[in-house]
Amino acid sequence: MTSSPVRIIGAAQTDFGKFRDRSLESIAIEAGIAAVRDAGVDRTDLQALFCGNAYAGSLVGQRISKEMGLDGLPVFNHENACASGASALAHACLAVGAGQFTTVLVLGVEQLSALGGGLLPIGEDDPEIAAGLTMPAAYAMRTESYLSRFGGKPEDIAQVAVKSRRQAGGNPRAQYRTPVTVDEVMESRLIADPITLLQMCPNADGAAALVVTSDPAAGGDDRSVQVLSSVVASGQFFQGWRDMAWPDITLRAVEEAYDQAGVTAADVDVVEVHDAAAIGEIMYYEALGLCERGEGMSFVFSQESSLAGRTAVNTGGGLLSRGHPLGATGVVQVVELVAQLRGETGANQVSGAEVALAHCTGGGIWGVDNGACAVHVLGR
Image (cartoon, rainbow, N blue to C red):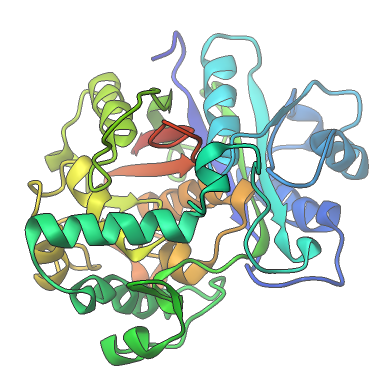
């Protein structure tokens, strides 16, 4: 992937929740300072800032860097819908690996409570949006398509939300940690038939940060995590019938990521997937190669995606329970995986984790599966 090995030596996140009494900058700074301290480097060692954010307007990174005392450094702002933070990380890995910088800070931040609640604002001029294809509606169509093709019932997919809450119970940073049952998931408010409230991720405020370096002396080998591959793909445009039960963009991104890293799905011990809806996690099991197509629900039922399973998925609760502050999501996924590879996740620790994968998709536009998809493979 790069000319120089790229490593993550610092990782941190804030709590996720609703923080209407705070500024976006203060949320970001909390994560950024914690990541720098975690890395054991000085602020003066940082040579650039890469910032992911979707809804806070222009110059978000500069606003944060000024308050952190990093003003004057090169700042790269990334907006790629839900994949904004993951795209910022990908750019940072590329720049550090190519020798443009040695040590940089990656920040992902969002304060969705500032928008007031409800559905997030999206392009009203898009013909699919104008026809009512909101994200909940799209996931409802994916759910119906999947069940029609492979059998099962909505209660089966609700098992993902149950697993998510169970694993979030061991993550003190998660927004929702109370266990739920399948009945409670199905009895929650209907959002887009057959999807109920607890099968969709909640909006959140929060931030996450990473320190990325090519300096072999930085961070120490005992807590350093190597970036084995970093891939960003964009959706391909086509008109006509679309297979709603198959995420083509994810397949293309993960195949390239596995190839770059020199691993296969069988080598991966722990995964973070973009479970914006419960059906998404089912579909992504299959696209990532964790199980065969059509076997995603069996993968949940058999506990293979749980902490002690063959490939643990969304160990911190995922978007469904941790919450989804768009710009921060792709970064916090990697924060969780860094902690897993370091052996620092306590009750949620996956035994012997050595290879991890983060998957984050972003947005939808007319005629395109998803706007963006980022995949990072990490290893010790």
